[in-house]
Length: 297
Image (cartoon, rainbow, N blue to C red):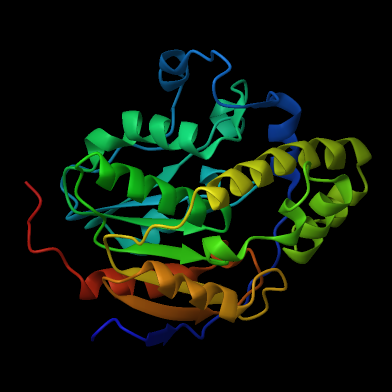
């Protein structure tokens, strides 16, 4: 099926907003943001337990699928994906600093700094056919890193898939001020369906969760400010049918960055549809269509 202007969809299931209890715990243990150029020892970060790779690539897989999580989230967002994709696709969640097993590391708010660190750790694993999926903030991370890797002479992804994210040039109103306000953070959390009753009942958890969310939004602003170049690979852009934060039209605007081919898709669910099976099924179908000719060794 040709890519230009195509639309695909998944119809089964509905998304139920998940609790941010885990994120609150992450924020409680994590450290504050760390901008570029402040003298951080990057080699020490990469040697931390787990690093950016939540799991190691499966050597026999025909394709490596690197998955980038949403703001306030972590690699556990993709915990069920390996079973959904099967053994021939190696699902590799990417974990940003300041959450999960990287709790004691400082969060990154500078997009260029993040791309350099991703290149250092993920770059050696991009020598075989691979694809990227990024959800919300993760879409911007995947886009920036794909460009960075290509500029350094690396092979492009087979596909770059983005979900629940407006095209980089559209921006977000909450990111327009000098600082991201507390009310702005709360508005994003409400619209994404990410504030659970458990979180509202625990003000300390809520404050800590907002801290990590604010830093991730600052990272999103940095990534959007540097965006503009087209991607050297086809793009799949997926929207949630009940997403109150990002409209289908804003997702479709990724076509500007996809001269190599573009498709849109939609799945049931709100902004956090990443945890439902529909998205994995849709992405699996697209990746099967673009089965690489190069076999795994």
